[in-house]
Length: 117
Image (spheres, one colour):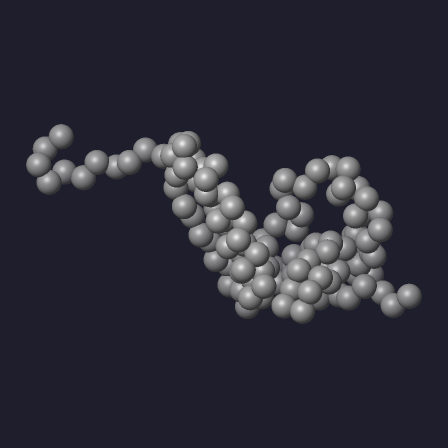
């Protein structure tokens, strides 16, 4: 390598967090080598919890790591969106947990509320 030349590091893994805030999509990326990724997970979880508490929304309607069995149970217990006829998903917002439609219309999430019982 020549003097003054910058070597690009090679990373094995990366952690990516994509969220919506007031209609804007925000992506946070942290590149890590294989040894660092396990140690970074608790910090990532804390960051996601903090972002969700501040009003950020996930760009993913269902968490990727959610086991199928618990996903089925949630969908069976969930109210159905009256517009899209889809099972609503439980989300954590500024004031606690709430039901939301998982359908995104353009850049906005469906705003329908669960039907009143």
